[in-house]
Figure 1 (tube, rainbow, N blue to C red):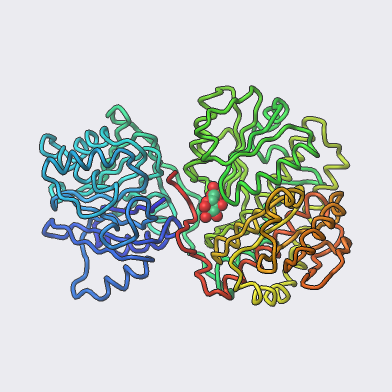
Figure 2 (figure 1 turned 120 degrees about the vertical axis):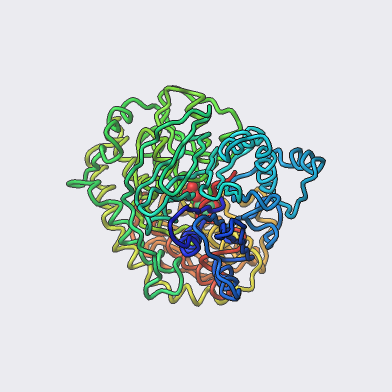
Length: 615
Ligand code: G6P
């Protein structure tokens, strides 16, 4: 999930490359680099380990500016080879070809061995360097750069989005994609390439989305696109509705903190124009939504990370309330296990970014396995790859989420899934008007309830101080709260680097209880629901083994506080739909404050990326 940006312009390209890299940093920040063809048609390259700001510092320290009209740049999330300057992109072959790459070349060892035999020298441990050498090799027998790239990519197995420049063809960039996103930006003073339109929004709003196997020749005043078979094709440019405005932290210390506090507004925005008189407007899922929802007999949700946890909550809702069978699966498993997909299945791809490679691939495979499949994507990214592949699209309207650890995207996904629950249940006759009205009025109360819950921050800060020296934690919940416990454990792992696991509280006795002692804190979620008494018994089992406990409860749950047990009351009388959303908030705050105590990089935790566009 590296980020690529590049361009051919009539002015110095370096500032545009740096701005693009900063905007693409959410795709990875292990290292970054750029290369420009100077006036003398020679390469001028800079690479640095760590964030883009390090590359900027590195450029300032140079006594000569990097200046030229053509360049490509890259921000890396390491797959092959440690994060280091020599593994950072762009890579160069024989001073004639330079490449930036997002994706994974699976047969790189085989290609590397053959290229070494042909006299190529490898300067990095990456899989990307073979692409540069393959193109250089093809240039010996081809009459254009595009032809060399067309031939070179034939030998590549795996996924790629690449940008290529050559000192022999100083007027063009070649862009090629298979399995990794890449688009062309059409500007007034030049043309550009990028993995995501965010990188180019302050330069252009006109984009051409490359299709699988496309190769584009990008020049100052012309873009030519060749399809998989080498035929020139016309791919129309589309006008983006996104705004360039750089997100800022306002009065907050971190994006994650800001995004936690933005949840009331984000949920208002998700609900806006989707409900009328306590009833869900089912056509907000798309024109064909009514017809599709009436016809389906089961649901398959596929997602990764936090989005997967949201899917788990929806499974309980869909089966219990809308009475429709619902399965949830991690996309990286689903895509490889040849699932049986029954007719009349609604496939839901759940993804904040709409670009997660495993989720996209799972959808493509599901469509191949059953061509009657109907698909819906629930995403926060209006012009993402998932929206282009799905029959129906529902946007979560959370606004840009910059913090790598997902917060408002998760709660708005839950709200979107609750709206979907009503739309499907209503059309299938399994949810009455009254039930729907109760659910919707509950959803409308969420912004106020979240604001109330956020007032617990001080108390949670206090808990976080005690927590920071722990090396592990166990999160417990039952029903939908098991999914929320999973999300709480994931948040803690992601940003505080404390090992955390979540268990359904009833499963504790089948193994994890062996871990419990005074060094294993347990965080339990105790809403006042039909499983409360069972959960209370589980808490006794934990308590009697000496654990330090934190219990987040509904005011009416009345969990009895004991020694070494802190009970924090959230709010009262939450319903089946509102409870999982509200109980998420203290867990987000807890992991945020533990991370602050530990001094980790909250918004850009180590080894992670916001959008994972490689498998
Ligand atoms: C990455 C992010 C997670 C996110 C997951 C799925 O791992 O760090 O926060 O939940 O990808 O992303 P998606 O965009 O598909 O929801």
